[in-house]
Each structure stands twice: as structure tokens, then as C-alpha cells.
Amino acid sequence: DGGITQSPKYLFRKEGQNVTLSCEQNLNHDAMYWYRQDPGQGLRLIYYSQIVNDFQKGDIAEGYSVSREKKESFPLTVTSAQKNPTAFYLCASSERQGRVQPQHFGDGTRLSIL
Amino acid sequence: AQSVTQLDSHVSVSEGTPVLLRCNYSSSYSPSLFWYVQHPNKGLQLLLKYTSAATLVKGINGFEAEFKKSETSFHLTKPSAHMSDAAEYFCVVSDPLTSYGKLTFGQGTILTVHP
View 1 (cartoon, chains in turn orange, red):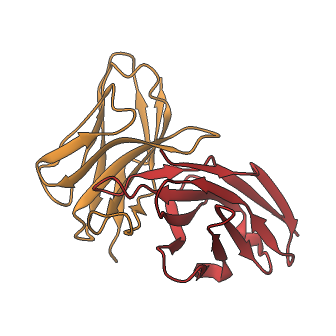
View 2 (view 1 turned 180 degrees about the horizontal axis):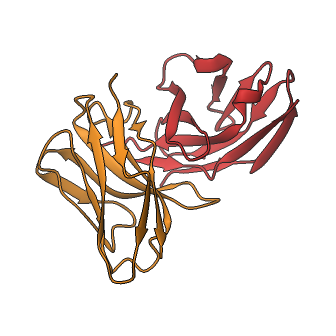
View 3 (view 1 turned 30 degrees about the horizontal axis):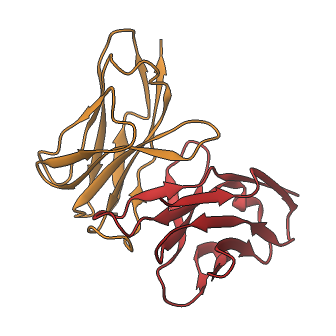
């Protein structure tokens, strides 16, 4: 079945450590996205990529970095500069650019601070 | 700028009774609107979408929503709630001015279904 796979499901970070969250899709979608979800809030966009080797900052990109070397992969690195990284992180993809294409989501990675 | 307001943070119903989750939006242009559902520790699943075709949109699992431009509303309804409907629901608007259709999410409504 086609879908989006996020790993790991749970991740713990020590102070001063960078961690990388994996996102892989086999839907052949061009666009991919990373969101952060905090309790009682909607999703907030961290980064998005519309095509391989290109990505753009979203609303809350500070303390995060991404790469898009392959169409199916869009890993997110949470750097030590992100002072409040505890959250639920969701990766999404969409068929092509444009407002009418819904985004499909993975099952998320929950990141906590040790 | 566009925005989405979900009017209830929590809704509680009995199994077998109707469900109404309310959403108002603000957009300068003709928007695309979506409803997503999220079960605990899971990703978001698309329930339905409105993209300027029929104003009454039918989705999965018996849900439907009606786009009312005059009221800037996009409320989600279901005639009869099931225990499996208990989850968090998000109303989402897509920005037509961005090349990638930026999504703006509502704060979410937690639906509780009592037996």
C-alpha cells in the first residue's frame, strides 16, 4: 500500500544534541511538508519542498533543517538551537502544487527531551 | 491573510445521535477547505474537501459538510455518531495565493462519544 512512513515513532533528545526524523513516501508525490503539533494548537509549518533539491522555510523554521536529495525522502533535523523541541512532528506530502490537492500525512514522531 | 476558527474545543455526544462540528473561515479569495480527523498518536486523515464544486460535500465514514459563503462557514455533520468517531477534528483552509497551497489549521475540536 502507498503511504508515508515516519520513523522513529518515539525519539528522545539530550541537551545540545541534534536529532534527525525520517520521512519516506511511496506515493510519487512532488511536494513534501513538515509540521509541528503542540497540545491545543493546530499544526504549524516548519519546512516544505515542492521539488527535489529545493525547499523553503515555513512559519517556524528556526532551529530546524531539512534536505531533499530524493523525491521520496524529506528528513528533518532538530538542532540544538531549537530550545523547545518537545512536540509531535508530522510529515505530509501532496500530489502536486496547488491549492486543491489535499495533503496526506504520516503517523508522526513524538520527540521528548531527556 | 486567511484564518480558521473552530467554534468548539470539545463536543460530547451520545452514540447514535447527530454530530455537529462548527468551523468558520476568513479568506479574501475563493478558498479550498478540508476536514481532517486525528486519532490519538496518529497522523491526520482526510475526511472531505471542498474545491468550489458542489457546496454540499460528502466524505468518508458518513460525514458531510456544507460550504456557506454568505456565512463563511464549513460545518461538519454526521447523522448518527459511532464510538469509533471519537477523535480530534481539524478544519483547514488552503491559501490560493501560494504556489503550494499553504494550509492554515484550526485549533481542533475533540469529539467524545458516550455509549
